[in-house]
Length: 129
Length: 137
Length: 218
Image (cartoon, rainbow over all chains, first blue to last red; front, top):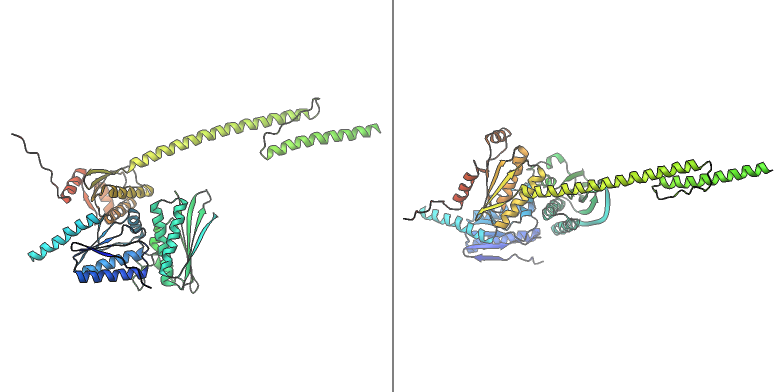
């Protein structure tokens, strides 16, 4: 069965992917693999995971997100999560799940601004050495 | 406590069923008048419980129903049962930070925090049943 | 012969009157006070009983009426109290935008679990509405900050963080600071400043802003 793939867009040197809710396990694994491959191919410095359309983040999805952030980080890509809904944020905190090593922003616009700042800092550090 | 006619039962075997279960649960919660945040809590709790079934048991089912308390309060009850091996050490799995070999915790302490009432019955070799309830304020 | 007929007649009469009075008493005990006693035109042995019974029923009707009036008044008081409580709730966690992307949330009064949840929800709604990136939570007016309140605060800060907003807690008195430390509350991730002014200065710094005096015109 062909799993519908989540579209991954490119804005400037960053990748943007919008997770729709109801991401079942096979689709989730496929998504993670697609993402990491795109990062590798495009050498994107930043990745935005947009969760605006997600109405439930359980421990599985939280772990998946953490895994993506960690793996992308290993490849030198900064990850920013955007669009978390208030009710999802509250549920995550009450569930006791931590999104480690992940920067968050309210929406896509702020996410890109945050990426520019962080990636810009990295570039500056590279130049200074 | 009395049970009303509103009851939905969702069989749980694969990860797709997790989504069905929480959608049904969320729908009932909304119909009963729970706000968005409580809807999210209930849906997340169902997701955690159903996922345990998929991970640790051959199969199970989730039943969501409307309930009325002795003093007339309304609420929702979610019963998640499976025919797995049962839980050997309930105290252990109810601790925060507990996780199985695959790195995934059983999500039970978190589920308990999300809901108002939490009960767990388990029998080795037979299965497990978790009952959670949330009341309208 | 005549005596026997009289006795039978008398028995019959007693039976009848008792039966009608019994019907009345049964109706009343079932809650129906609308039943009417019809006293016979001629005074008989049951007249006194009928009169007293009627008086008793009227007394019950009056008691019920007074009771219902009291209930209605109580109901009105309860509704008014509910309205007042609602107003207090709304006032209790206002979220104020003091600058672009900067919110202030002054908390006044005791915070129980229910209020703590409302505060968290109101704050997140405010962050979404004002697109805030920095929130100053002022707890100067919170009398008791124990482990529970501190944990609620930490949860709120975490939730705000998931929406991309940094929180600064101001107004922690030295007593509160001491009790929190002795209670072993882990505030390591929490940014704090002494008061609202210091909090706003921090917010400005984070936003890359500076407040400088206007150049004087010559």
